[in-house]
Image: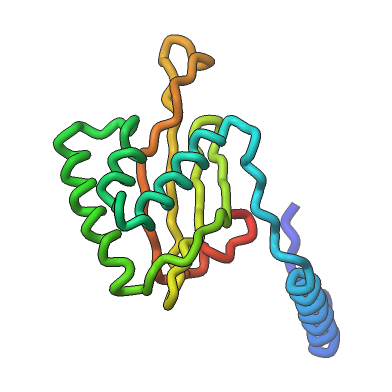
Length: 180
């Protein structure tokens, strides 16, 4: 059935204004409620299958913040089981180590780190997000792990592998996304 709107079917300007005001009040109330709530808790990954990943990340941070061990050793340890070809891995480690070694000059000396987000994407992809606190400015690190499965037997999952890592100094909007 086709409905033709006639002039008499349209709400009056006063009715439209009241509807708009009601919608604005509802949006304002929802925003106040969301702002009044505590920030979402970081999911606890301890005692779970995520332990090897969180342990590897914490070990990485401990190594890169210790001048006696350094970024190169931390990266080599973190990327040990990664699927990258050896030449590409060596180049990646060299480039990332140089960037990491420059963090104190750019952002200040390391102070501490803390987990700020865990996001599972399906069964076999996990993104860990950490706040890396420096004296002058924080960084947000992202570690993306993948657990490959056998094509013949999807239930036969291999161990978790780091497939991507990066840090962000822009502190952009996705940082505050409540779903992560």
